[in-house]
Each structure stands twice: as C-alpha cells, then as structure tokens.
Image 1: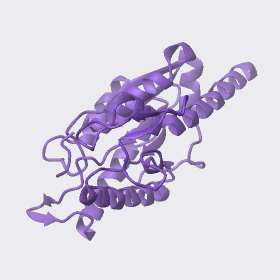
Image 2: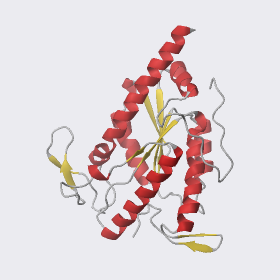
Image 3: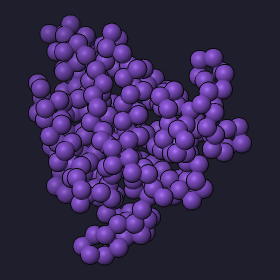
Image 4: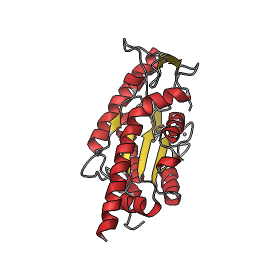
Length: 261
C-alpha cells in the first residue's frame, strides 16, 4: 500500500498551465535576483517542498545547513500531499502563497510517496505510469517547478529511496525514472537517493553505515517506508554539499557585484 505521508529584480514569470517551466542556462546556476537577495540579507534561504519525505529532508538540511553558516532552511513540505492529490490540495497555489511570503534562493522538491497510485481525472481512471498518468502528473510537475522558480530560485529534485515492500519499491523506481526524465527536460538537477538507501547487494536495508563513523546504524522506521533522522541525513549528504557549493558561488558573486558598484 502507498504511504500516506507534506527583490531587486522582477521574479521569473510563471507560465500558463500546461507550459514547461523556463530553464536557466545551467542546471544549478544562480539567478541575478537570488544573488541580489543574498547580498541584501547575508543569508542563503532554502525552501523544502514535498510530502512526509520532504519533511524529513527539511529536518536533515536544517541540521546540515546551520544558521551560523549563513543558511535559513524553510519547511514548505506537508504530509499527505502529492501530484495525484489535487482534489485535496492545489500544490501550486499553496507553493505560490508560501513563496510570496518567504521568497527563497534555492528550492528542494521531494514528492512521490503518495503518488504510487492510480487517480481519477475528469472522471477517468489514470493507472500508475500509464500515458494519462504521466501526461497529467508531468504537466502538474512542470507548473510546480515554474512556481518554485518564480522567486529566481535554483531548483533541485530529490528522488525517493528504496522501499521494503517489493511492489511499492518497483513503483517507486519507475516514478524516480519518470521524475529524472522530467527534470532532465526542465534542466533541473535530479539527485538520486536509492544507492544511499541499499546494502552492498543493492537491497533494501534498515541498517546502513554511518557517514562519519562507518558504524552500522538503524536508518529506517518500522514501516519500511520512512527514515529516521540519521537516514535522511545520509540520503541528503550529497544534496547538502551541492547546496553549499552553490551558496559559496552566490556569496562570491554577491560580493563581486557589491565591489563593482
């Protein structure tokens, strides 16, 4: 069963529904508006969108990107949400409202735990990974990424880890491949997490080596779906490093711009 798990420049225009989000020249390039904001605030603001996995990712990044290092990590994630859940919550509207109140420089997206299901659209069932499912979910993802980019934010999409249940894991692998292709088309970095959530044989594992000590630690919760804090930190380590590199570039560009004035 699927888990029920949530400035100086004008912002990037949000395209009409059904249109692809505008892509930057480089997949993790910093926009001028984000650089100007970093110069003005002295902070790099990271917003995390998603479902309950997104909440876990937010907690991990909040630990890995501390305030004393010049970061502010904002929780925009909400449990029990997803791109097949539009009858319950319009993700675009909610994200637009969140970003209007709190514009961010980097947006991290982690959805999918609730989307390994068929859904109905216009009275017709859309089976998981059918052409209708991919078309509708793909259009919703396009619009969501456009909203995430609307404040000039660089966007990253974080894939889902391995699942204990074989059927659900197969569905998650298929969705990860779909998300990766969507992000490739939108020029958004897709960061996979599966290899950080399996053992040496590529199998689901509740206990995995700690990144600092190498000692095996419990990483997963009893449901075989979610992760403990140390588990989320394990799968987000590469993302956190990439965000730190981008933040350094933003700060350097902000300082260079200020010096040139």
